[in-house]
Length: 444
Image (cartoon, rainbow, N blue to C red):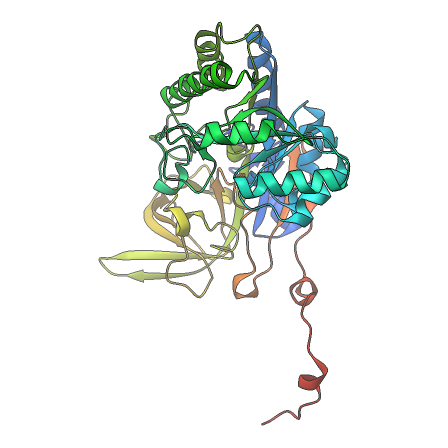
């Protein structure tokens, strides 16, 4: 397994992250356990800020909290000078409860409810990313009713389909549930309509071309398309865009063969393209916003499991089951995502057998990793799966009424619990038994 960030094999032959021996973390917090390398999270955030600072352009780096949204992460984003991208009232509430400055929060989503819009306006968030005409009219009506002036970006699809590892991850092409299409003229009409709304202040446009992207060409082409659109808007409507948001999608290394670029390379490609294609459209180059999520937290996360049972089918496969699975990592089942793993308590031992890692859910599709080489696996061993910091905790579920794991941040030999493991009481906390059912006699 590739060792990310502060991960290393210590003298005892155990995996160590942030100076913490994972066998000791297991003893204190149990498994499954999400372990976040705080130093690596902060380093990635600073790489973005430093790269944009070096470009000389105005910018905002907004952490896409959908990747991993907990109060402690919102605090770190604030401390590192990031803005915050939210897509629901739950993510917004988490940010506000963490004390994140509302004026640096951007609200995304293709179906914001009236309650969510009201909550965000009352909180005084910095910007809405408007996805469709229904939302545009609804936002204007609610803002007017509250006497508020609301800043907005319009999400547009520039017709760029970036390379991504799964078709569902490509969202910049014309056929998408997101945004106004530039090619068919709907984006221009949306700009015209938005500029006429008394309570909405149009800052510019937003584009997101995909996820887990390893090249710069898609971003550069998106910049070119958006610049062409910006020039057309200026010429036909006389409207300037002070802000252009180019979204996220910057890739990370999950497995051998993944070839992400350095953060500075992505940023340089984007900012150079902006300087080239936006030159002369208006007196000033636009402020550039981006929304990295996975690339800030993805490779900083490791999930620790305890091995339970195993099953060997002669000549076919050996299954090794762990105490988690698709409830804490649904990505293999959803996207056929690939991961690397190591026996964390015997990390210095050579591989002896090829096994497939199964989860404990009552689903044949609950498989975490197919065909991974490990030392001979025993019940009670600890299995560490790398790069689970993004879209693992945030997509976790209680399927089979399995409790969601705890989350710890580790740094400089210290571990801090940031999310408690769910209890059995948590599982039934929202259950209600109506009186008419409670009064029925129990049949035997």
